[in-house]
Image (cartoon, rainbow over all chains, first blue to last red; front, side):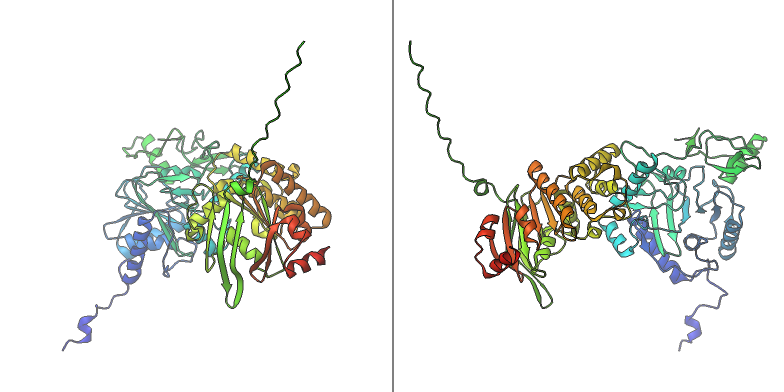
Length: 304
Length: 275
């Protein structure tokens, strides 16, 4: 006779990586589907994690599913590694998975990010996880989600172009700042989370896998390596990134990258690198330390 | 002095057959039947439309005329029936096409003006944007061309161009219909469907919209199918008339013939009620 106790696992305080195995299995299946159909939103169950919806629960679930004891995790919040949100997510992953945390883009294997893609190029062995608040690019033009899904099925994106058309008519240029809609692999239009326009060209034919996950909306989508990501733009009005090429970081003296604007009491503004650890590395190098800075997506403010 | 030789007698040109007899129809529907539960909406209805003509469809409410028009726009499928359009890329029974092909075909080749502008227009977008959307769906990606052609279409439907950026919701009923019309003709469709385009407009605006339609028809020789319960509108616009009742076509013929010499008792009642 086999005792029931022999068939069950020994008691544990929690499963590895916080999520239970069936939740991770479901996540993996959703991720595989998302990779198989680039840019298509795949539904998933979105489990509870000890964090409020809207603070990166979608990204966290992907990270917890992908993580293993050998992983090196970097968490970015608006370009910074030291904000409360970034620190607590990174510490949580370290605690429940035994993975190592880092600030260095070169060193990390999993990068969970909110609003930014690092300035240094990512490699094949790195995975970028983006936290997405609103995964549906059609929401502003079609509030009915059932109809929006039909529009995706029909590749009926005329209304997204219409929004851009009206922005040009009204303002003379495209006003869409973040979440700029982009056509993935020539088929699905995605909203690439609230990354600035500056970061969108980084996804095109990138070497790394990007997973975009919305915890509250329970949708996951992906940009696999070497996939075309084309921002929607008119033939005679090309896509433009932010005019940050000429801005100089007041702390590191580096120019030609995406900057944060810091208003000064006298009404003027100073700028500093948005990718904070990239800035730290630049300062260290200028002080004579042997710091390795990877190849960057942009050089002198232009995409390489 | 010789007399000028007599001019040769003018030769009689060979008498052409009427155009209706020589040109193949642009639209051919045969044996369309459609039931909604117990209600028979259409019973074995056939219709043909020839290039450049205006086919008027009259009938009381519930006679199936709007259902028929929805079928022509491929928004609905019948229980049985065959639908062919003589346009490039549309071979075979169009009801066999999948959703995507139907949508692309209709977006490119069929224009429609609904009675209710909310069905045909995006109320949150500008009027020029509404027209441009049609071109965007058809794949136009040049901003200058989009703007230019939207303006052209709105101008052709006699829309006041100073209001081009106003949203349709801010416009009067007559102007909303003009925006719908501009949207419908922007791609120069092979077929223009009009579902009670002037119902709900006051008589003077109705006359202006009909004027525009008439002029468009004359200038561009657009093939139109006009559904209305208003005999006055049909009489003004249509070359041929189809009278429908309870899902069947009860009478069909040239407009003058139907109005002067109605044969079917229902048509007689209809014509006499009007006049």
